[in-house]
Each structure stands twice: as C-alpha cells, then as structure tokens.
Amino acid sequence: TELRIKNGTEELTIGAYATKDLAGKIEKAVLTSEDLQFMLKQQLQINSDVFEKRSDPQMILGCDYFCQIWQGALIPLPSEICLVKTTMGYTTIGTSQNKKKFEEVKKRETINFTAVTVENETDESTNERKEEDNQKKDMAMKSSDEFSGSLTEEKNEIDRRTMEFFKKTIEKREDGYYVRLPFKQINSNIPTNWSIAMKRLLSVVKYQSIEVLGMIDTIFKDQLELQVIEKVDMSEEVGGLVHYNPHQPVLTPHKTTTKCRVVIDGSSHFKNEPSLNDMIHQGPVILPDLTQ
Figure 1 (cartoon, helix red, strand yellow):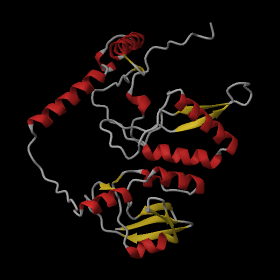
Figure 2: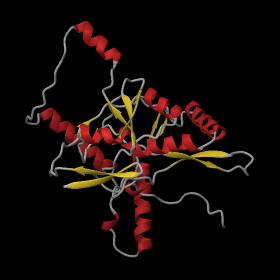
Figure 3: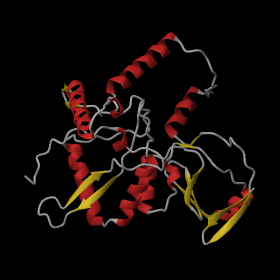
Figure 4: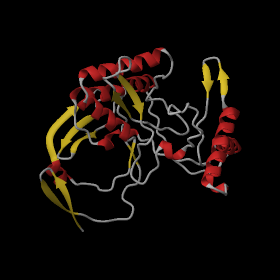
C-alpha cells in the first residue's frame, strides 16, 4: 500500500504494510509543568499529540522515512524529554528522568519489576467496583427518552428533576458547598480533552498581548486567593473521571470595571466525541429576565 502525506510544501510517498492491529495503546512520558512553561515561553509550534498520556499510533515510521521529515533541531526539556522538530511540528522523544525516584532506588540498591497477569476478582475488588457503580448511578440523571408529551412538558420535567438532584446532592462542608454535575447518562464517558486544552493555551499565549496575559494572570491569582479555584498536582494519580476544559479571554474594553474575563469552554470536543455540555443537563434558568 502506498500512502502520501504532506511533508512541508511537498508530498512524501510511503510504502506501507497495513494491519488491523498495529500496536494498541502505548504509554508516553508525561510532560512536567516545567516542560509546559518552557514551551510556552519559547512559543514553539507543538504537535497536539505530545500532550496525550497515551498514544494509539496509526502508523509506525522507519528511520528511512523519519529522516525525511526530521529537520534536525533537538531541544532538551527540563524533564530531559527532548523535542524533535519535524515538518509537521515538534514532537517528543526519549524518557523522563525523575531524579528523586532514581535516588530512592539507588539507596535501596534494588530495582522492582512489575509483571502483568490476569487473575480472578477478589471480594474486596468486587465490592469496590459495586460501590463505584452505585456512586455513578447516584450522580446520574434520568434521560429525556423516559418522558412523553410535548417538548415543553419534557423540558419542564427535566428541569424539575435537575433541581431535585441539586437539592438532594448538595453538601455543606467547612470549606464551602459541594455540588455534583447532573449527568444525562449513568455511564458518562468523555475524553480528557488534555491536548485540546493545551493547544488552546498555547494559542492564547501566542496571539494575546502581554497586557491581556497579565490580566488573565491577575484573574487566576485573585480566584486562587478567594479559593474559587485550586491548584492540582499533575503527577498525582486521580481515580474516576478527569476532564480538561480550555479557557480563553473575552475582552470588553468599553467597560469601566471588567475589561477582561476568563471564559471556560465547556463545548470543546474532539470529532465524533461529546463535550462536557453535551453530557450534563442544563437545568432551569434562574437568572432574571432582563428584557422584562
């Protein structure tokens, strides 16, 4: 099979062997926050796939073809992962060296290897899975397919159940109120959107002025101080659903107070994949009608 891919201003013809299963999901070295800051400062044109933690390769290139798209530049990142410049943008190569973990292994003078095996579920793991399923059911809302009648009646019924769900699940704790998202389906699977969020961030840094970036920085610092938002540890493993929403500035220079506000985009999504807005009920509109 012959494939033609765009190679800069030219086309590269590749003789390829097609197979149903190529390599499956491959774990990738995770970029650190220092790596991201470095790339933002350098304003590098990054291939969005480098931000994914796992890759499902659709093609494996040999060195004979790779040399034709490699443009020679090799940029080391703080984590010791390297950026390789190609005709399709920068991509990553190499492994991340975690010096702290290496020093711990060196002190123990042992190296642990992990073998993956298939075994029967234990009672403990079964109970954990049942508890997780019950939590998902508790967080889920009824779908609109259950209703009959006019669209207005269906909308009113969904809004009523959404409000009931809100009142039932809201919790008052020492540090504030905790609420849950009213998902439309019990098993709501949505991509992390990590690469979309990072690509939008790179675009904002590249095209917005220093003044606007300063406004965004001030907004986030104020929200951190007010505990509206909180920092997360990118290296910490988090169970359950993880989703990243890109943000962008909205400028209103004619206003005397808020000349810039940060909007979180819940409608961003990959092709043929749902967005966060698609997965949750909107609920009733509780803002006053300004036209009345």
